Image 1 (cartoon, rainbow, N blue to C red):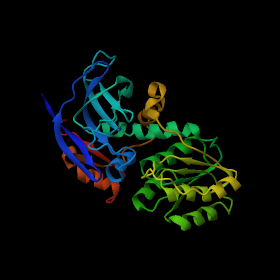
Image 2 (tube, helix red, strand yellow):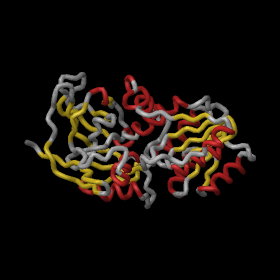
Image 3 (tube, rainbow, N blue to C red):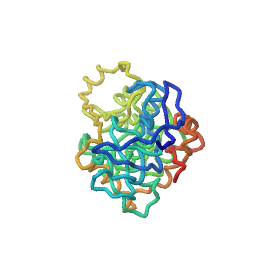
Image 4 (cartoon, rainbow, N blue to C red):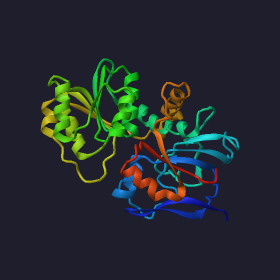
Amino acid sequence: MAIMKAVRILEKQEVICDEVLVPEIVKGKVLVKMHMASICGTDLHYVYDGWPRNNYPMKPGEPGHEGIGTIVDPGGSSFAEGDLVLTVPNIWQARNFADFQAISPEFLIKLESDKPPEQLMMAQQLGTVIFASRKLPDINGKSVVILGQGSAGIFHTYYLQTLGASTISIVEPNQARRNAGVAMGANHAIDRTGRGAVEAVADLTNGKGADVVIDAVGGHDTLNQAIEMVRPEGYVHVFGLPGTSELSPFDLGSFVLKHLDMGTLFGAQDEPELASFKKALRLINEGLIDMAPFVTHIFPIEKTREAFDLAKNPTDGALKVSLRMEHV
């Protein structure tokens, strides 16, 4: 049997590059030779927080779900050997962190573009933002605050402009990420956290609060900050996944007294025809968003631990950290 390299999360806090068997193709699956896979905030929770699943040791390649590769065996699907594809598996098939993965064809999008592969790969993260934005109220003419400027926060900064937001204020203590949000078009950048950030939003909105607040961090504290920052009868959108399954202290009093609405939307990978990911690819291919500045650090898969540690504690201007498979 052939051997490949794959990321293995052996237990909480322990992630390695291991050598394992190349997966066998079973009926209904396609074999993809992976070129690159990027690290999502959700992946960090599996490694460092033991959540949302902690069935250690995890399977080879789990939980990678942002990737790009080439079809090796189409397995009777409509794809052909040699097709370059975006791989966007759901949580149950996420195996992008490996040289090869067996995946259902409904989680693949054929790529026909002259854009660099690492830029096309960003369509996965942008696609989740586009998908989640379906839950938002009408953004046209609204003031928006976005908590966090990781890749999801930055792509919210971009996409909500296309929906007509009147002003976008970002809250991000990391200077490189804050600068990236400004470069993407944010009107105001707040480098404070906690109470200071809440007061800064109040100052920017003349004490009224923002029409819409996006929590792209997913922390217990940021959720309650969002409730404080939004105006009465405003909308709070929760995008980021929390780092724990513990119940979150929730400012129910303010939520009720301010007549707020709140929502979230998860599972873009199961959207019919992968419509949001395809829209993201169109925006990239048409040059409406430049992904070049965001893929800042690419590690060979052998340096899995270093890559995850940098993604967890970003320094050196790190925005999106990715793994490259060395067989390419």
